[in-house]
Length: 293
Image (cartoon, rainbow, N blue to C red; front, side, top):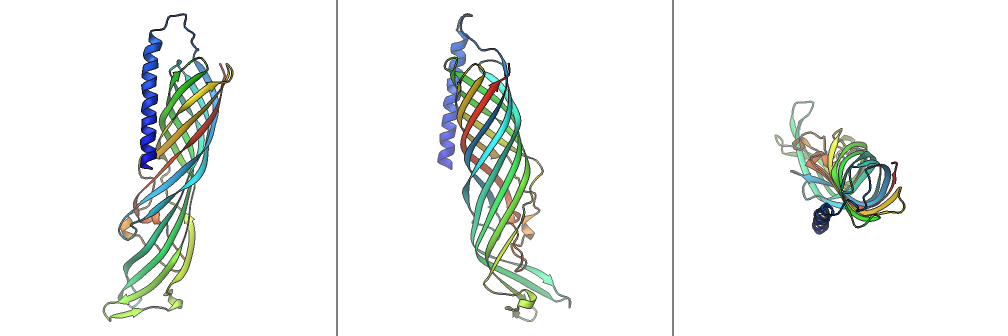
């Protein structure tokens, strides 16, 4: 991902340099040079991408591995172009993020008190823990468009800004092998393999549920590529897109009190044991735009 990010940065820098060069060249053109008047346009964009949800683990939930998953996103856009060089875009879109987290081993304990007021330690250990996280979002983009025309039909573009993102779907599905024991330090007594009390060993456990996310998240977004006028009213585009959440999207409380599996019937999301969760995606975007006037 670092290599891809570096390539994107270089690509965006080239587009910006081309934009600066073309701006200087256009300023020296005569009044007879062909120009395109300001336009209001509507469009649709869609494309595949690789997405990732990263959970930065703390305490017992550490050394998390996160894999990328393929997704498809799209948007309906409204654009106003002030000149041949610059414009603004808004609209509504749909985006999704998927990732599979894996944790090789886990061990944690919590002090509790039984009905006789004796203090005991509830100990949970696990291995081969996997969790699939899926997030779908309603996006409202607010972007600036920089355009570098080569001629009246062909040109480069850079669209950058933010997405206001509202989670629509936020699910997780987890599985792993767990062992549950209890230890009474006052009696040096360890209890295990008592299924009636939920004390079992090397048991396969699976669970699913809903992720706790903030109501609205802000994403930085950028797309750069080429665009071409098929006719005076219709324009197509192809670009490389990238977006990333600007802050923690998780709405879980303190990870210090996190238990990954309180009982053999439940597995909590590993996002609850993380101090920060972020998302990002990189992909290709194809667009079709119609100029109203």
